[in-house]
Image (tube, rainbow, N blue to C red; front, side, top):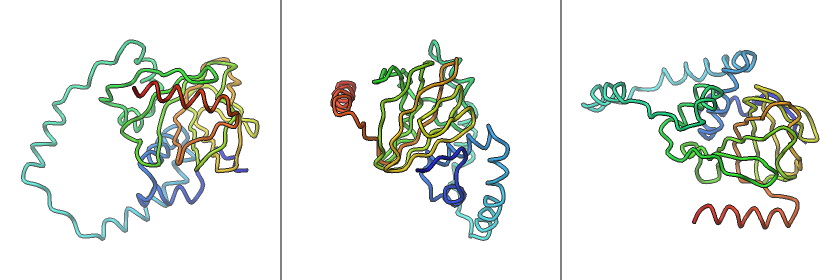
Length: 219
């Protein structure tokens, strides 16, 4: 089983080179904001790839590039919906920017007593990015993974049966890593999760109910 609190060298290389999905790059940037040691670990790799990029020929800008940039500066950020101000205060800048302007930011109730918000701008084919809100003593049902799952803790803490993870930690689970995350802090645990391939609930009854709930919410 894989149990880590920071991204490994492979993910750091992929993030620095741009090979990693944007959702993983945002997660890595968020951990760098929250944990200085993560930023220090990634800095040498980013410097190397930055130097390589500087050697590439530049691409010409469109004639209206300056006008479009100035127009963006004049754009007014949308007012936060009730209850979102506290959430926004928890989000590192890279994640806050990804959520900026997203119309659907309501929490959806899930099995196990937790709720989530899809991060639409970072989700796509084979990649699901979302925020989780898990109350004290609650958790996600036991599950396996079709691909890697990366979970960055933004507030609170949880234990998944393998290890404990607190603010700024990343929990990495690979296919075959069956775990059962459960909040062990006195405060609600807020996480940013990137799933590469989805999850598989081990309880067939829960799996069926979850599929029905997700279908109903799409209608």
